[in-house]
Length: 210
Image (cartoon, rainbow, N blue to C red; front, side, top):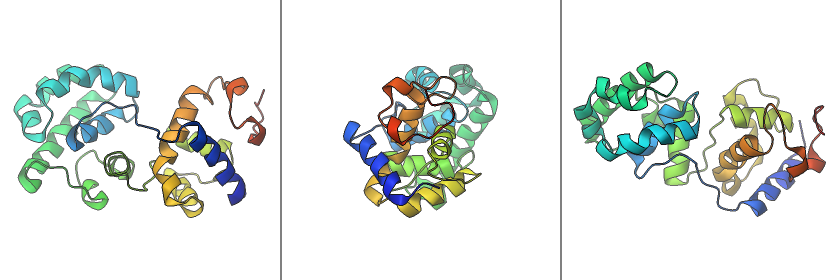
């Protein structure tokens, strides 16, 4: 595993390049963020944004989503992977929000994970993006990049999250997911990494480095 000092050097390069990274999901309140993140599992942000551009015009809170109903919800998100399961979960979590939290999204990671379709990663995203809390969501991009750069040798998202949280200060943790996701999405692509555009080229020891 790479030395802490080197990990911090690399993250500082990302910080200088993009000091205020943002999620690429479109949302305008905690509820639409939560729904967008639930929809984004095994889907692209671009695909989610396309589906929610019309959905959020008519269902931007829990009660409106319940009024829309599961079958009508499916019509809006049918282009997204696993849309049947996601529709069921979104209606179920919306019902819980209305019945137990007055329709508001609880800003508490432990409570969020009790909602249908909301796991540890989703809760971390909501806490990070909406509340700017130092939580780290490890998705496929973060997992791949963290292992590629030898930030962690963890085999699960939680192990990688724990390794990174140990070495990064809070002001870096809050942006780490965004930095690594954007880096993995646009530069260090899984199939064809753009090594000629890589800002951390000198730090990379990957076998397929060009």
